[in-house]
Image (cartoon, rainbow, N blue to C red; front, side, top):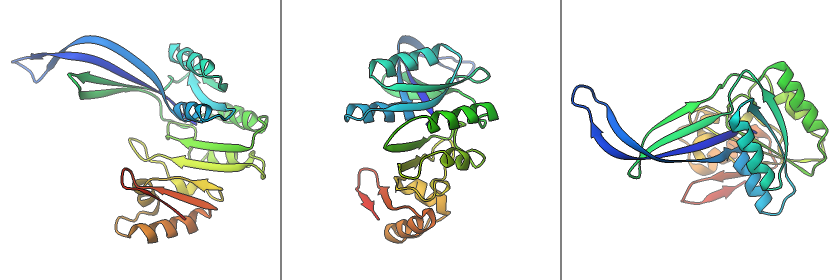
Amino acid sequence: GDTIIDGFNYTSMIGGQTKTPTISVRHESQKDYVGGAAIVAQHLRAAGAQVTFTTLLGADDRKDFTLNVLSKNEIKVNAIIDENRPTTYKNAIIADGYRLIKVDTLDNSSINDDCLAQFEKAIDNTDCDVVICSDFRHGIFNRRTIDRLLSVIPPQVFKVADSQVASRWGNITEFRNFDLITPNEREARFALADQDSGIRPLASKLYDIANCKTLILKLGEVACGSH
């Protein structure tokens, strides 16, 4: 899945300029964390699983940061390095507890054929019981790549998919015939272009179209439903 480094730039408000609508803040501290599919890998490891994480990174310092954090958590990494793109970095500027703006350093274009072939080889060479596709739509998963990536997963392996709809648009129905998919309500409605159906018919329709064995529809703080 897609690695994201989440940065938090903590500042304090100084004031604003009189001539232009410019906010002035003083830098206090910076803290970076692994996020995206990398934090999914960390959660799985914390739960006791032996984890091999296959991901895309740039040839930069944030690649080294990612590998160092995951190594400390005893996670094996198949790092596919693309020298022509940065490691995805999202830096939030926070002043006195309020987020002012988020500055992203990223390249959302689809991975090239060489990187795709490296992903296929890494998946094919990894002995496992479960494969989790953690899709944040930053270049790994798209209509061009998904079928090829799924084709190298052995048929007996338990397959799980989650595809986010946020700043980028994932589509969980592109992960068909999986053992488990875990969209939230917004992701389900986006995938089906359905703003109006109730939760039960929405889940039933998605279950049929995705042809999955189990669907867990996440409803935020309200609940979750299974189908």
